Amino acid sequence: MKKSNFLNGAIIATAGIIICKIIGLVYVIPFYAMIGVTGGALYSYAYSIYAIFLNLSTSGIPVAMSKLVSEYNALEQYNTKERAFKIGSSIIIGLGLISFIALMIFAPTIANILKGGVEGGNSVESIASVIRVVSTALLVVPLFSVTKGYLQGHKMMTPSSIANVLEQLVRVIVLLLGSFIVVKVMNSSIELAVKISVFAATVGAAFGYLFLKIVINKNKKELNKNALAKEEELKITNKDIFKKIIFYAIPFVLVDLIDSFYVIVDSTTIIRTLTDMGMSGSNAEIVLSSIATWATKLDMIIISVSIGFVTSLIPHISSSYVKKEYNEVNRKINQALEMLTLIVLPLTLGLSFLATPVWTIFYGYNKLSVSVFRLYALQALTYSIHWLLVNILQSLNKSKITLGTLFGAFVFKAIFNIPAMKYLPLIGIPAYQGATVLTLFIQVVTIIFMLGYLKYKFNFHFRSIFGNMFKISISALLMILGLLLLNCFIPAHVTTRFSSIMIVLLYALVGGIIYFISTYKFGLLNNFFKLLKSRRG
Image (cartoon, rainbow, N blue to C red):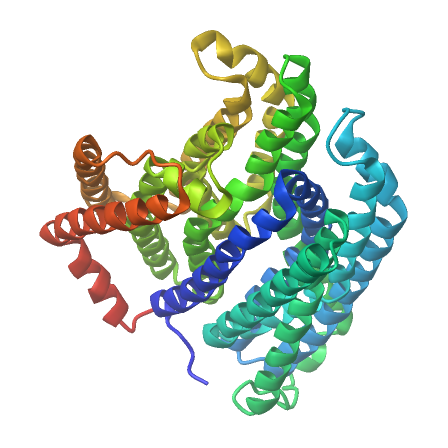
């Protein structure tokens, strides 16, 4: 199976993730219609907690595996690479089992904390019950994730992308079919439908894992799975490998854990604060579920681009860094930042501009949700760049500075989330936008700091992309001006699903044409295609 250079690998990984996210969005339309706002909030409660335990179980080891496999391949230590995969798999299975047991035992306590004594909406018992069901995924997803990391470390992005699509397809089929049977055929409870929906994650991951096992078995020779240990490898003990996996994994775990805690801060403060300020419990749940689940699903289509770049970038940077090819590392970072901005900036601005019709297509029109989403959509850009830089620093073994930066950002979020909701209305920003405004501010500050650190510590230069970044920004601005002009004749504010689809298609076509022409005139597209043809990655 063919290995991918950096940008080709990034595009393969990104395409797979985007397809998954599109599938994950399309199903939302019938799913949301079946379970409603209350069911959506219940789904959000379960997934916000599941995400934390999933990060504990999977975030570090798969990425560490990708990094470690890439390094051992660069050093041609194939036997050690295989031992690392076996050890990493054992670790991640153990972590998944521990997390599963913890959720099963403490689900009622967690549900009580999430609900916070607020009247109305879902009961504590229902939340605890759904959390227990979704915890079964922790027995399968970790092994699926580490196997993807193993193949990505070999720079084989296609199998992982196919596995992601397969996993998502199976999950959505089980979710929709199960929910339909429960709600429409059996006329049973929304709670049961949500339970089946979250259990679908377990089934989907199992199918994805089986596919990857088949791929590995068919490519044993190319993967050097049966390579004999060289003399220098005999000196590397399993204990040494174990320590290295943990050393690489812990920073990634903590990074994703801190990231998940942002959701928990919102989950435990938004409803209480907004209800204390006079908002009804049901409206407060709408704000929370929009931020924690439904708006995130829409943003993830765009954020998938950064995930694809990170997936491809880590093994390439690790390989170049271990060989001390620092100019090559700098080149790849510049490529990633420029290409990411070229793709993500117009998509983010377009999504925010079309917040009303986009939200209406997937969830039906709701004035409060649309208002939340219009601002929240901007996080697709800040989070994408933020996430890319975090993983770059991790790949360069700068875990302390990364963790210090993110922990400081989290503490800032935890301290000022409630004050932001209470005091931003004094300058005209609604209380329900406070948490989003604070997150955007934090992400921008951390981006500036991480770029400065890369320049200071590694003497990396970004001058070569400043001009192109300016051209990208001008192109995006021209696109928005064109859409504003179009809005004068054909308003984008529509509240029916069919009209929303037509508006989104029209505006996407016009905006896309303007952006394409502008970037072409600036020579940005020529640069992009030249990079794709280059085999230097």
